Length: 175
Image (cartoon, rainbow, N blue to C red; front, side, top):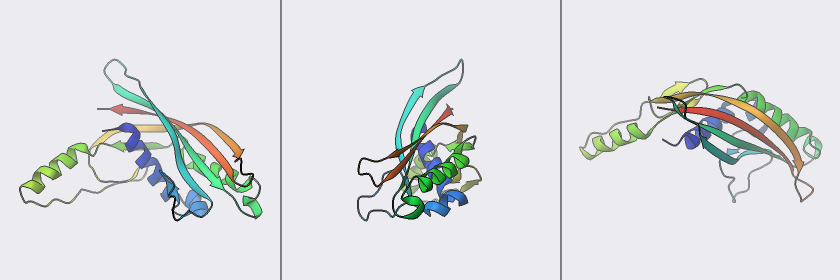
């Protein structure tokens, strides 16, 4: 399991399902923004992330720092920074202090592949967790609390696009 990857999945799912966030962006929450067709503004993208191994006496874990970028441009509230600030506020309320479950899908995928080879078709178990959204594995790796650190509001060099960069941290225990 890669905790950074799994946490990214959980964060994107949570943002897409949050009513306040989706009121701004609908489902336009991306790990990587598609080049074509260009998404309509506003939208959210995942920024850089860092993982730091942070083991205790008998607990393996990683501290993950990640950035979420909010983008806005257009007329009205989107012309100034009002829209991107409101969107950033919705993202912060959605994630800060959120307790989510990070899932290890690897053992399930291995089990599924072995059974597929023997001709038995398996369907993934679907586990619904209010905090983490939809997962394709019943194996929990660890509960995680996400903490907001800082929000920066910027105007991009083109002079048109408004940008909010929100930084978060999370500690993931690895079983």
